[in-house]
Image (cartoon, rainbow, N blue to C red):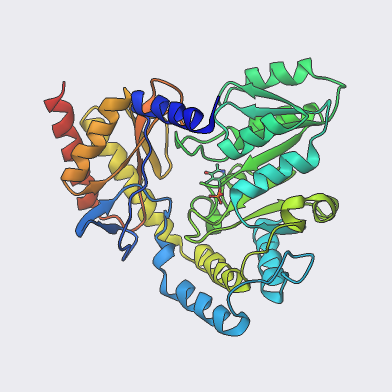
Length: 388
Ligand SMILES: *Cc1c(COP(=O)(O)O)cnc(C)c1O
């Protein structure tokens, strides 16, 4: 087959199934709560910037101070020249905050999940991952010489069955998320850890959506459930309002990654100024209970009013509040309907979610006003009544 035929065929598949994805150019993001697109203002219900920290003045200032001190780029990987006192300070701060011996910075959550699988998992090993695990983890697991098994979402029995079948083979890694990115529900971490320990497996918790948002000082899902997985992944693209990620682990594991992780050795470290900004973001996250309280108020309000409207809510107490629509086309229509009325809410379709479960992924933020939420829900109700 020739190249253009291959590419066009693949594109047509997406078009035919109403799965065409499109980027749009957002012109301004003033306060994280509103965005401007094509000269029109929208209330933003699609951002993972749950606390609105992307616009936080102290964090912006810290980044500027970092720029003045260090310049723009890091100049190389951490092993060459790219590891500064700003990086070291941030790693130490993260480790202290979350109660781990070590933290290692990565350029993104995607990279850290890839690195974990590539560097730790060998032939005869098993990766037993929640069915709804993030694409970064699943993709790496498929590429890995280890065997990937996917247990039923949040189902301890299912995990147990896989673990008990794999006894005495190779290393076992159980992977889950603190809060699931497309459903917003939480993993039963306490039970997961118990089963995992029973089989001498390691537990990986990707807390991209929990860190900063829940638990005392925003310490996340693992703190809330009082567990300490061997591998904790946190990302800075969501509640931190920046980008980047870190792996929290013990001393031996950190040293192992520094020897073997290609993502660390062959990839340019994050700019030191970004590390300075992240240090300020951690500080803000720790002390800003008020932002978490506002977010919780908004979540409670959203769920209460949605129940009154009899919307099909999922079992989520997080900032992620999906409404399952099912059909791809209807989901797109709804997203469009909302957009015409000034609300920005992304439709999420397969393969991001399973076929037939296209959804509106509504994300709430600390600085949404109750009025934003009630208007959104009113508009949703209007759509449902119209298209019954
Ligand atoms: C966003 C996300 C990632 C990827 O993190 P990036 O820093 O955006 O690459 C990984 N895991 C989960 C669960 C996520 O939601």
